[in-house]
Length: 178
Length: 355
Image (cartoon, rainbow over all chains, first blue to last red; front, top):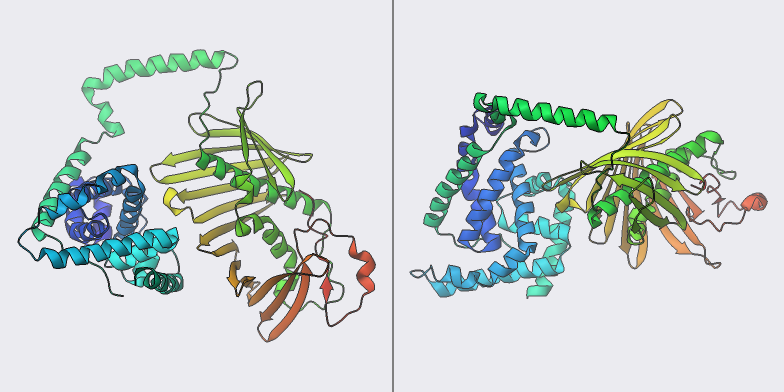
């Protein structure tokens, strides 16, 4: 059963099938959200909110306009960006380094910290220097598994705009972080 | 630059999956639907409450007037109301002005060759109206909201667009139903509509009427998507129904306005090139496609001049036109005799009527 058929059945009353949709996309969205918020507990909370929100809006889903996957990314992207802007996130982010690093002990923590710090640095720069639209594009480009075509579908903008935004933003980011 | 990926603990992710699915499914199962109220045990109670509500409604209906419970106008609501009321009033007043007087562009020295020139009135009208979106949100920033006490309406929103005062008197009840009036100069438009907010979504519908003519505008956006605004417009003027869609997209220092009407469409972009503001228009009108580069310059008299380079099929053409929004224009009739083939001057602003 493909996504559209599953959704049709869910909407006609077979709610349990929603678990199958969540099962299918959980890990992909988890990685995307975690890359942004860098905290397991917050990622889990956000995913629960995203999937429930999505369920409530399922009847609005229009498969002729976008695939379920890109729609899921769209909702997730909006939800995470809202969260990142929220006071709640700012409060939580003061403790996130302690919270997550303390749980990782057996791996090469130094390498990991360098990688994580770099990502946080780029993310921070993206938020600071890019326009909101470019931020959304870059954030999907770097942290999701979406192709340019899928990003354009997710954001409902032409491919050309996505390519252009990536090019311009990468130039800006290079200047900022190097 | 490659994609970024933080290292993820697969075990944590697996646990999260189980938690997420359990939690969401639990919430879905506990979610109340309208039908859950109609369980047999509760039916009698519901029936009683329903009868009481019905009784109250009847009593209220018998009383002459009940005060409307107003809502507070947030910044977001005000912004949308200002933009949408401005669009409605501009379109309806322009449409009415154009049906009352014949307003054909005055292009005396040019042999009209391109679809762009044939439809320059329409482009000019949209360009003028949408310039506030293209340039900046100037009119939104100057909107003043006042709460009214001794008035038929709860609020007065006033704002200036191109030095014209627009006044929007309105009441919005707690169900989002809007009633009001838009006043521009001596013109009054009766307005009705509604606002709906649902999580991230915002929908606003406004109908402005004058006698039998009306403009219906539907605005819908997600709060996160503020950079793109889409208006669906249905206008019924002099018995003719037309529908169009206007999208305004703001991205960095670029602005795009797309207007679709039937098979015709205009896509106008504004950007900066070497410090010069450039407007680039792509159009498809009456089955013909074309492009126009528009640059703006200030002439020796301080007037804004728009230079148009039109390409349509094999045709290429240059025109210089004054600022469509420039209301200080002298009447240029006396200049009609200026036969300067090199620098064609078109006064096409006569048809931009006062709102």
